[in-house]
Image (cartoon, rainbow, N blue to C red; front, side, top):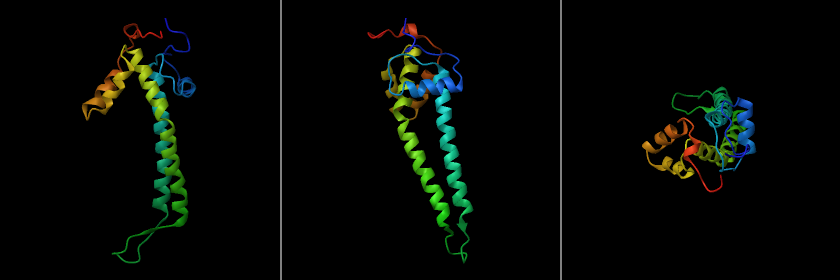
Length: 150
């Protein structure tokens, strides 16, 4: 039996899943439920899409019409000043969440009874990420994975 801090939390709410995601930032031991995997992924997607939307809208609104049909339209300086920090923030945000995202996927693989090494299947072109997704969304069977640390 796993200690409470290493055990999965099935049916975790959005807040609980995010809290565990950031508390267990680089913890590859233990298990994770589907909700602990999906809620942080949704959070990451919403933040990235929100910032990207602000950047794109500011660039489109700040577009200055071309003088002739053959000229490219320019973009106002204020639009670039808004879009650039948004794009930099997206990059930093996603870079900061690479390790915890991999960690929660490895913990999820442990929960479905697989070794964390199965994460590397995502590098196989086309079929690898699909197979990893199937594994990550499989039903929980932690009794199949018995490492030395458990």
